Image (tube, rainbow, N blue to C red; front, side, top):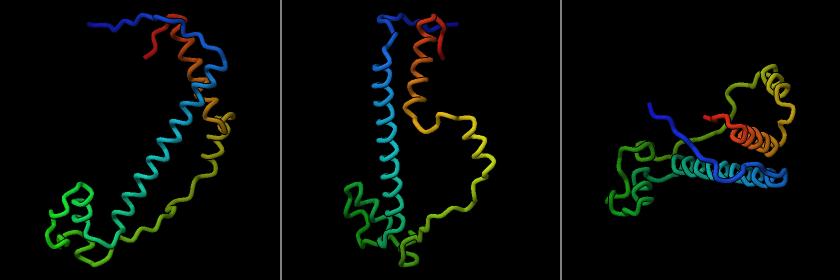
Length: 135
């Protein structure tokens, strides 16, 4: 059985300001990734709802303008119906207010993800500094 071993080269103790800076950086990264995911989702929706041959759009996206010589594959939903897919975002189920209240009651500091990140960093650093193995 092989166990991984780590050597701490520098002290992991951090000042509150340093933890706050790291938390802010992580929070901004999270926001950037969320925005990137939203952009990608919108691109997929635009692709599916576009009034063009889906195969031709994919081929064009990957730089192969001549993959579909006629511009119509005759197989995708657009070529079959002459229309892009209709997408109407909406909520299909209503949230359970009791479950929401339970979550909110369990997370009193829920409004600031940076605080949760700071607590996570503090916990990790304290575990490593105390010699406990963190998996």
